[in-house]
Amino acid sequence: MRNIFICLSLFLSAQIFAQSTNELSAKLQQELDKIQSSHKTPGVTFSVVLPDDEVIATASGLADMEKGIPMTPEHKMLGGSTGKVFYSVVIMQLVEEGKIDLDEPVSTYLGSYDWYNRLPNASNLTMRALMRHESGIPRYVFKEAFQKDVLKDADKVWKPEELLAYVFDDEPLFAVGEDFAYSDTNYIVACMVVEKVTGKSLYKEVQKRVLKKAGLKYSEPQDKRKYKGMAQGYNGEEEFFPGTAIMENGKSRYNWQFEWAGGGMVITSQDLAVLGKKIYEGQMFSKTLLENEYLKGRSAKQLGGDWGLGVHMANTPVGKMYGHSGFMPGYITNMMYFPEFGFSVCYQINGSTPEYMSIMRDLMGLAAIVKENLPK
Image (cartoon, rainbow, N blue to C red):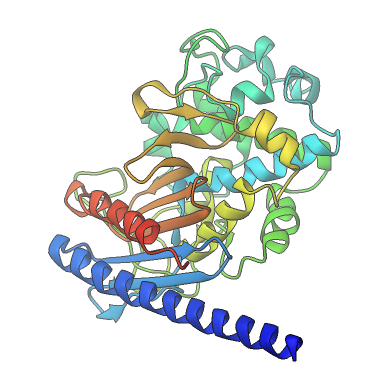
């Protein structure tokens, strides 16, 4: 008889929890529709992973305004710099395996390349400095020469050293470790180390060590110009890579492959919310490395908060946050995990003009709704 009561109690608890989750999902969808409508952003997806790993995925607006295609949670977008989250996991696993040392000079791994010493601060670079953006290496993407060259051939396959060439012989922004300056170039160098020590391509390592391990359903490498289920991206006419991101034939208007380790992942908000929770709860590499190394940060200055080994840490109105944001012309992504409450959220919008980006503050309010309505 006692076992019957226990089973009944567990069944009723599960029913109550499911009802609570359904109510939260409905509330988030209702609020998301209001926010999207008021800001007139083309489309938006918003996903939550609750403390028990239950996933709520919502969407509003349009994936393609010209064709009138509704946005769905399964629509893919460019993740921009959030791709660095994937690569930081690969690196930390290699640290755990003893194949990479965070404080070993990068020259130990890449010094045999004849171009290596042309990097700013080449002799003092470490993986830690690269991952925490304290290397002093400038951003290649903002170089005028690069922005002209990348438009010349949308099918060009850029080699990592070709990207680095835009900063060869530049004066460093500061000495290694003395300051913070976010730079995609850091991860180009860091992920060349990954390929050197593994003997495999970065994306193969991501597939095995991140996508498969985390059970992600929709994420894939950003190594071509056409993807199934891709939302159209809308960028301002005066912005970098203006206009729509995708042509009528489904191909990108410009070369997405160039980003590589600076971002370089096509994702959904659901996948990134799942990955964020798994990372920050110690499921992707050891909790010891997570606590003693990954979350050990330095001041991120103008960005606010601290920066760890591929993670932005800051205080928000909802509470302490670990996460990462990303931008690619036509797309904005933001992933956040709230350690005090054990849930993660991620949103993506398929518009990157200042007008479209004004929605971000209100989307942060959805995280507050999650916090206030966590299933008991």
